Length: 195
Image 1 (cartoon, rainbow, N blue to C red):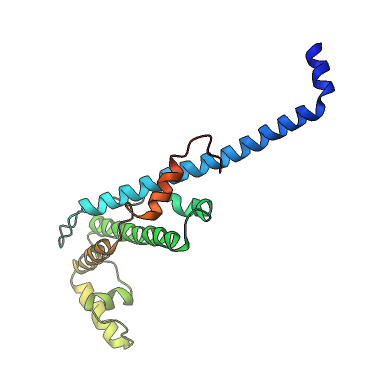
Image 2 (cartoon, helix red, strand yellow):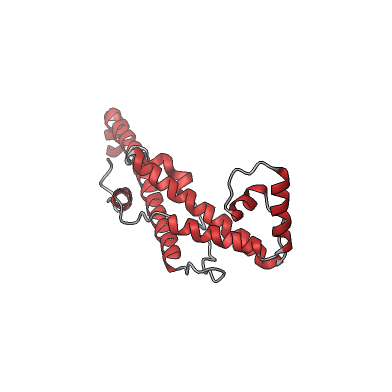
């Protein structure tokens, strides 16, 4: 009974302790989520860079066939790092993810082409890129290029491999930059580092 009497006599202290614990647990949960997201983003970037470095940038022998970003935690958790990273660092990471996502779409297209072994009718933009002529507005010229592509079943794959080679060689590696160093620090914060 003495414990109940103590709690009743000190209701303000008990309320303060319970409130403090609730706030502490809330802040700790937010920090744990941020730390986990930072670790996942670091892993995704490391994996994507490793895939690009290990790929062979040859012609039709291009070996980049695995998705660079099987998951994309940056887009889901960018809001967690707004206060920790500079605008330029956020832009740099966002650009990396954008480039890797585009390369992933090219990998999917190349896989589709390999499976079907039949050319799809490309858009006018793809035919313009393949001929090296950008900005063609003459419908007859576009039609001629589309016919040329349809006559050569391997041309779509050549275009896709060419784009894969071009964009994977332009991707900027981030793993040893200041932006990722900040993410590393966030990912290894101890439980007592609340702020």
